[in-house]
Image (tube, rainbow, N blue to C red):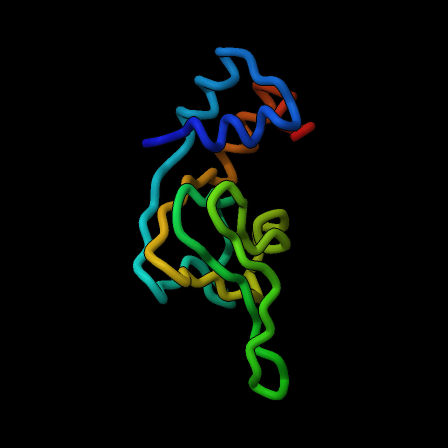
Length: 125
């Protein structure tokens, strides 16, 4: 698992010591997606924040007129999620789809909450 990108991203906003970096790396999981594969779909509970290592994802919803309304594109070094679903741990309303073959590092909700309790600097981030 390549975690140097996410560590550099976070260190732009807060400075992590070695123990904090080790704790973060311990909760990261890697997920690979094929082109057009969905990371999330409406109705699913978003249990992860995803950091794009490589590839491209987009989040979108289907409007009342059945058109796709893109909310966000996420390329390398960006985060993507259905943040409302993630924060509330309730059913989401967005699709998150891989535009290209994509690899993400994921931060699971419960593990991230525990990390923030142990290392409050992550709450600042």
